[in-house]
Image (cartoon, rainbow, N blue to C red):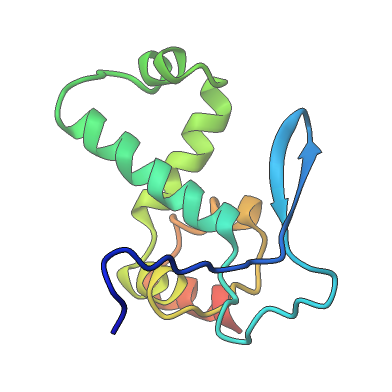
Amino acid sequence: MTKPDDTIRVLIPLKVRKKNGRPKIMPPADYLPSEDQTQDPHVLRAIGRAWGWRRRIEAGEFSTIQDLAEAVGLAERHVSRQLRLAYLAPEVLKRLTCGRDASAVSLYDLCFLAGETWQEQVERVFH
């Protein structure tokens, strides 16, 4: 146990570099991600954004996708496509977000699977 006046220092060898004008934390050159981190952060972010948009529409904050797109500052076509992620099968969402399963399709293709049956979605996303 440490005393209240003791200092604990943790050294994490990271580098900060600019990417697209923004600072980005870069891991050390010898860093190898663990095998359980197969989630694509872009997919997770898009799913979260789609669910947030869906809730706002269902709450009556926006009456059309065009109103939503104008409010978030994105193209209506992009919002419409990404909003489909909120309607994916529960099994697909569970495996992508909680199960750490990697998708076999791109984010763009994932957006177009919401119209298929839930079983077809699972088969196409993970096989």
